[in-house]
Length: 192
Image (cartoon, rainbow, N blue to C red):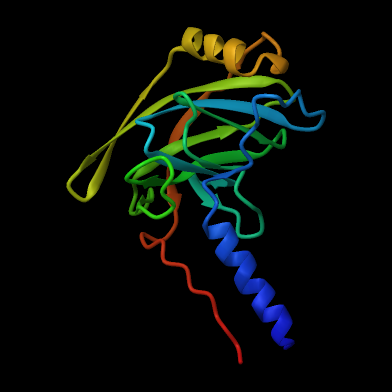
């Protein structure tokens, strides 16, 4: 294998690991023609969420091994705004607690060993509100509270993302277990 290819792969992996947001919709962005916008309230601000595509079989969500995250990042002013392909099934498959909003490394929590997470089907194009998720640590576990305030999300949309329009639909979600390992360690083989 070419040494330049190995160095490029390592640099790309290191750069991706340092990202603090992935696929976040910028405030100036207009409606994408072929994707759906989702809005999720996340608090407190030093928690990042990974929303990943997959499938539901026998009432269990399975993360796709061939796709990229639909969203990874921290909330901005209390909300994450991501985009996904209509028809995709998405779930929150990782929550990372960081010391402050600029940190990259932190403590990861994954919904494994029968724990449930928010799973939803992406509707056809538009802007949709999922609900709000509040996280609080409790020893080695994460307490999660789900709630909803569509009025607050609508106000956020109007003030922070006016180019996305004024119509905000809602998405129904389920709380389902996820088939995944309880470890979030990533191994990168280096061949010499």
